[in-house]
Image (cartoon, rainbow, N blue to C red; front, side):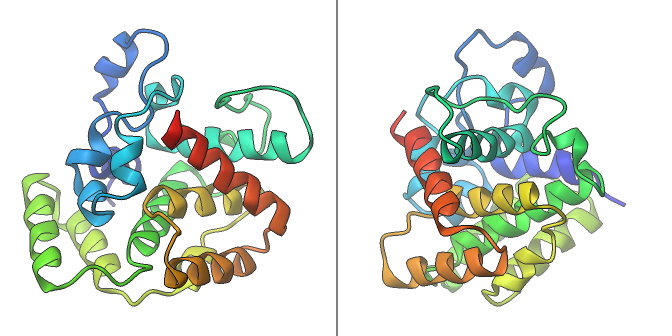
Length: 223
């Protein structure tokens, strides 16, 4: 069994744990990684590349899962009308806290990766040449056989929101998966917008809450 959390950080290009620990306050959400890693390649020059260069608090200090959790929690707080600006990490007793994922953080990390890959594929821009470049990036990560097979299987899978929704063990996880898909796309084209509509329905998200999640992702990008 491969370490899905570690794989998520590799694919997102997150800083190593020691570097995160030493990072000064402020940090970078998805620092440098989305731009240079597999996810950045998946998302072309869209939102993921933009996120890589924008300051959005210290979420990445805890890794990729925490970044997505912060977006989901912040969106929920805004949906409830709570005051505050900027991304907020969820408190330990929140359903958005990664450690409270009912089936563990490994499953959560897998779901986040599936959501990101599905989101990146929503506009159908990954052609044969793009896929070859992605495979080269995967090879460069020196993944073990299981991890590599997982990523390649998801890349080869058809765009299907049910692949994401089956990981939504709680409403909070559903919100985090929706945020993860948004991180890998820029929902401007009709195909992407239709994908998000289907995904929100599959995840049983309130449309108003879904809009807040999109707003939180956009705010992180515009940082």
